[in-house]
Length: 339
View 1 (cartoon, rainbow, N blue to C red):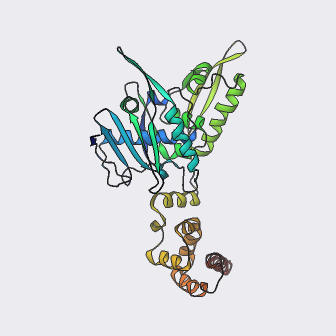
View 2: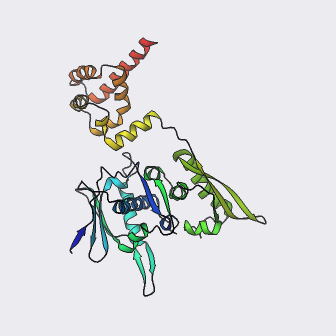
View 3: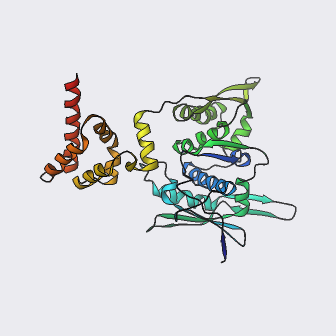
């Protein structure tokens, strides 16, 4: 099949996390019951769809968007784009999410025809290259780019960090909202596809609204408060008031964010990495102990200590573990000498 490639998107210029994306309000308020991993697939689609209207260019071979002559959009992404962070290894959930989205549909209707269209088609994971590919119908793609009814703007890193699909949706609704939003309980049930779950309104509020607010309070710069509106004794509507939070990033959080975005090379010199690798540290081992290594950079002659450790580590049964204990001991001695 002949294909025409749109402007390629650079993974370096267009990182998935730490990026503000604009999402069609139609997509934000659509009725669906995606789980967390299905939402992460859709976040990738939002990011890639937006890249087209921004004219961002692709410089890697990992991300591809191709439109064929029949109107289908062919997507290729690395498997890692669907994971929350470096600790997320749940590849089975990604497969399940792709299969589920393949089964789920949205209805398309114009003056001439009604169609039922799969969200994605022909999902495939190339195990040797760890790449994911699938096809999106142009009408699904167009919904992501339809801003005729407004849009919401949010940080995709925050969205990926959330662990509840309900929290994700409330975050999308509240992220760029300045005025209160009023929803009937019935409308919220339809949006979240929970018409047949949590029969009692108090359970719906506790399990969906309150639980989402709690997670947003902990993990998001945007949360909400709400007030119930009653007809007699029955709660029929909720008014949501967006709240901007001041989240203080800890030093460890900053280190993890830097490593996730740039790799350990962003904080270690080439010589420090070389010594660590010669001792026996893998990339994962370096990343897992990066806070310790950065502390050593601040308080020790790190290169000198690594050179000593490298020489002695050859006789150790577990050289990496011994190196960690030695460095922690050196730091403790340094701190006690300053006391």
